[in-house]
Image 1: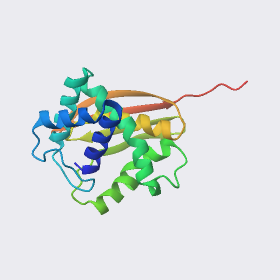
Image 2: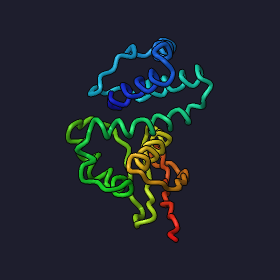
Image 3: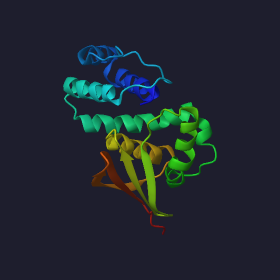
Image 4: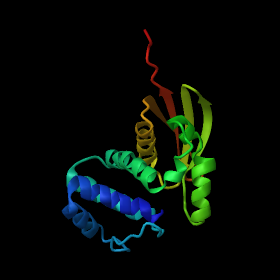
Amino acid sequence: MKGIVFTEFLEMVSGRFGEDAVDDIIEECELATGGAYTSVGTYDHRELVSLVQALSSRTGLPAPALVRAFGVYLFPRFATLYPRFFESTTGAFEFLSGIEQVIHAEVRKLYPDAELPRFEIERHISSELQMVYTSKHRFAELAEGLIEGCLSHFGETANITRENLPDSDGATRVRFSLRRHVTATA
Protein backbone atom coordinates (compact mmCIF):
# COMPACT_ATOMS: atom_id res chain seq x y z
CA MET A 1 0.00 0.00 0.00
CA LYS A 2 1.36 3.41 -0.92
CA GLY A 3 2.72 5.53 1.89
CA ILE A 4 0.44 8.46 1.16
CA VAL A 5 -2.43 6.43 2.63
CA PHE A 6 -0.44 5.99 5.86
CA THR A 7 0.77 9.58 6.09
CA GLU A 8 -2.73 10.94 5.47
CA PHE A 9 -4.24 8.52 7.99
CA LEU A 10 -1.83 9.72 10.67
CA GLU A 11 -2.60 13.35 9.73
CA MET A 12 -6.31 12.66 10.15
CA VAL A 13 -5.72 11.00 13.51
CA SER A 14 -3.59 13.93 14.66
CA GLY A 15 -6.18 16.48 13.57
CA ARG A 16 -9.18 14.69 15.07
CA PHE A 17 -7.75 12.93 18.11
CA GLY A 18 -4.48 14.76 18.83
CA GLU A 19 -0.79 14.11 18.37
CA ASP A 20 -0.71 11.95 21.51
CA ALA A 21 -3.17 9.56 19.86
CA VAL A 22 -0.79 9.17 16.91
CA ASP A 23 2.13 8.39 19.22
CA ASP A 24 0.05 6.00 21.30
CA ILE A 25 -1.32 3.93 18.42
CA ILE A 26 2.11 3.68 16.77
CA GLU A 27 3.65 2.55 20.05
CA GLU A 28 0.85 0.07 20.72
CA CYS A 29 1.19 -1.58 17.31
CA GLU A 30 4.90 -2.42 17.36
CA LEU A 31 5.13 -1.84 13.62
CA ALA A 32 8.00 -3.13 11.50
CA THR A 33 8.41 0.41 10.13
CA GLY A 34 8.22 1.99 13.56
CA GLY A 35 5.44 4.15 12.14
CA ALA A 36 7.84 6.08 9.91
CA TYR A 37 6.22 6.47 6.49
CA THR A 38 6.94 8.50 3.39
CA SER A 39 4.20 9.35 0.94
CA VAL A 40 5.98 7.58 -1.95
CA GLY A 41 7.03 4.47 -0.01
CA THR A 42 5.24 1.15 -0.18
CA TYR A 43 4.19 -0.56 3.04
CA ASP A 44 2.37 -3.65 4.21
CA HIS A 45 -1.36 -2.88 4.34
CA ARG A 46 -1.57 -4.87 7.59
CA GLU A 47 0.20 -2.00 9.33
CA LEU A 48 -2.74 0.26 8.47
CA VAL A 49 -5.14 -2.39 9.76
CA SER A 50 -3.17 -2.49 13.02
CA LEU A 51 -3.22 1.30 13.34
CA VAL A 52 -6.98 1.41 12.74
CA GLN A 53 -7.57 -1.35 15.31
CA ALA A 54 -5.43 0.49 17.86
CA LEU A 55 -7.32 3.73 17.20
CA SER A 56 -10.62 1.87 17.56
CA SER A 57 -9.52 0.49 20.93
CA ARG A 58 -8.36 3.94 22.05
CA THR A 59 -11.48 5.83 20.94
CA GLY A 60 -14.18 3.18 21.32
CA LEU A 61 -15.28 3.87 17.73
CA PRO A 62 -15.84 0.86 15.45
CA ALA A 63 -12.94 0.21 13.07
CA PRO A 64 -15.19 0.15 9.96
CA ALA A 65 -16.58 3.60 10.87
CA LEU A 66 -13.04 4.95 11.32
CA VAL A 67 -11.95 3.58 7.93
CA ARG A 68 -15.03 5.05 6.23
CA ALA A 69 -14.41 8.43 7.92
CA PHE A 70 -10.83 8.25 6.70
CA GLY A 71 -12.08 7.77 3.13
CA VAL A 72 -14.28 10.86 3.44
CA TYR A 73 -11.26 12.77 4.79
CA LEU A 74 -8.90 11.41 2.12
CA PHE A 75 -10.84 12.39 -1.00
CA PRO A 76 -10.43 16.18 -0.67
CA ARG A 77 -6.78 15.61 0.24
CA PHE A 78 -6.32 13.79 -3.07
CA ALA A 79 -8.06 16.69 -4.83
CA THR A 80 -5.59 19.10 -3.21
CA LEU A 81 -2.49 16.97 -3.79
CA TYR A 82 -3.35 15.84 -7.34
CA PRO A 83 -5.40 18.65 -8.92
CA ARG A 84 -4.67 17.49 -12.49
CA PHE A 85 -6.94 14.49 -11.96
CA PHE A 86 -9.85 16.83 -11.25
CA GLU A 87 -9.35 19.55 -13.87
CA SER A 88 -11.58 18.25 -16.64
CA THR A 89 -14.12 16.37 -14.53
CA THR A 90 -17.52 17.97 -14.14
CA GLY A 91 -19.17 15.69 -11.61
CA ALA A 92 -18.94 12.81 -9.19
CA PHE A 93 -20.42 10.13 -11.46
CA GLU A 94 -18.05 11.08 -14.27
CA PHE A 95 -15.08 11.04 -11.89
CA LEU A 96 -16.03 7.70 -10.31
CA SER A 97 -16.65 6.13 -13.73
CA GLY A 98 -13.12 7.03 -14.80
CA ILE A 99 -11.22 5.82 -11.76
CA GLU A 100 -9.91 2.65 -13.38
CA GLN A 101 -9.11 4.02 -16.84
CA VAL A 102 -7.85 7.46 -15.80
CA ILE A 103 -6.76 7.68 -12.16
CA HIS A 104 -5.50 4.16 -11.57
CA ALA A 105 -3.83 4.05 -15.00
CA GLU A 106 -1.84 7.18 -14.11
CA VAL A 107 -1.00 5.89 -10.63
CA ARG A 108 0.32 2.65 -12.15
CA LYS A 109 2.58 4.66 -14.48
CA LEU A 110 4.03 6.56 -11.52
CA TYR A 111 4.11 3.62 -9.10
CA PRO A 112 4.24 0.28 -10.93
CA ASP A 113 4.36 -1.54 -7.58
CA ALA A 114 1.09 0.03 -6.34
CA GLU A 115 -1.51 -2.53 -5.30
CA LEU A 116 -4.71 -0.76 -6.23
CA PRO A 117 -8.25 -1.99 -5.89
CA ARG A 118 -10.18 -2.54 -9.09
CA PHE A 119 -13.42 -0.75 -9.94
CA GLU A 120 -15.66 -2.21 -12.61
CA ILE A 121 -18.48 0.00 -13.83
CA GLU A 122 -21.60 -2.10 -14.34
CA ARG A 123 -24.06 0.69 -15.08
CA HIS A 124 -23.73 4.41 -15.65
CA ILE A 125 -26.65 6.58 -16.59
CA SER A 126 -27.31 10.16 -15.59
CA SER A 127 -29.11 9.23 -12.38
CA GLU A 128 -27.50 5.93 -11.45
CA LEU A 129 -24.04 4.42 -11.13
CA GLN A 130 -23.16 0.86 -10.17
CA MET A 131 -19.55 -0.04 -9.54
CA VAL A 132 -17.95 -3.21 -8.21
CA TYR A 133 -14.96 -2.82 -5.90
CA THR A 134 -12.51 -5.73 -5.83
CA SER A 135 -9.46 -5.86 -3.56
CA LYS A 136 -7.38 -8.36 -1.64
CA HIS A 137 -6.87 -5.70 1.05
CA ARG A 138 -10.50 -5.67 2.19
CA PHE A 139 -10.94 -1.93 2.52
CA ALA A 140 -14.48 -1.57 1.16
CA GLU A 141 -15.22 0.92 3.94
CA LEU A 142 -12.39 3.10 2.65
CA ALA A 143 -13.84 2.91 -0.87
CA GLU A 144 -17.27 3.83 0.48
CA GLY A 145 -15.83 6.82 2.33
CA LEU A 146 -13.97 7.93 -0.79
CA ILE A 147 -17.24 7.73 -2.75
CA GLU A 148 -18.95 9.87 -0.11
CA GLY A 149 -16.03 12.30 -0.20
CA CYS A 150 -16.26 12.46 -4.00
CA LEU A 151 -19.96 13.31 -3.90
CA SER A 152 -19.28 16.03 -1.33
CA HIS A 153 -16.35 17.42 -3.33
CA PHE A 154 -18.57 17.87 -6.38
CA GLY A 155 -21.49 19.21 -4.32
CA GLU A 156 -23.73 16.28 -5.21
CA THR A 157 -25.95 13.99 -3.19
CA ALA A 158 -26.85 10.39 -3.85
CA ASN A 159 -28.16 7.38 -2.02
CA ILE A 160 -25.42 4.77 -1.71
CA THR A 161 -26.28 1.13 -1.23
CA ARG A 162 -23.71 -1.54 -0.65
CA GLU A 163 -24.02 -5.21 -1.55
CA ASN A 164 -21.35 -7.67 -0.48
CA LEU A 165 -20.65 -10.09 -3.33
CA PRO A 166 -18.97 -13.49 -3.13
CA ASP A 167 -15.19 -13.24 -2.80
CA SER A 168 -13.17 -14.03 -5.90
CA ASP A 169 -9.65 -15.49 -5.68
CA GLY A 170 -9.34 -14.28 -2.09
CA ALA A 171 -10.43 -10.74 -2.95
CA THR A 172 -13.34 -8.89 -1.39
CA ARG A 173 -16.00 -7.78 -3.87
CA VAL A 174 -18.61 -5.14 -3.10
CA ARG A 175 -21.17 -3.54 -5.40
CA PHE A 176 -21.82 0.12 -4.71
CA SER A 177 -25.02 1.46 -6.25
CA LEU A 178 -25.43 5.22 -6.32
CA ARG A 179 -28.70 6.92 -7.18
CA ARG A 180 -28.72 10.70 -7.51
CA HIS A 181 -31.15 12.68 -5.41
CA VAL A 182 -33.59 14.33 -7.75
CA THR A 183 -35.02 17.61 -6.60
CA ALA A 184 -38.54 18.44 -7.65
CA THR A 185 -39.06 21.65 -9.55
CA ALA A 186 -42.13 23.78 -8.99
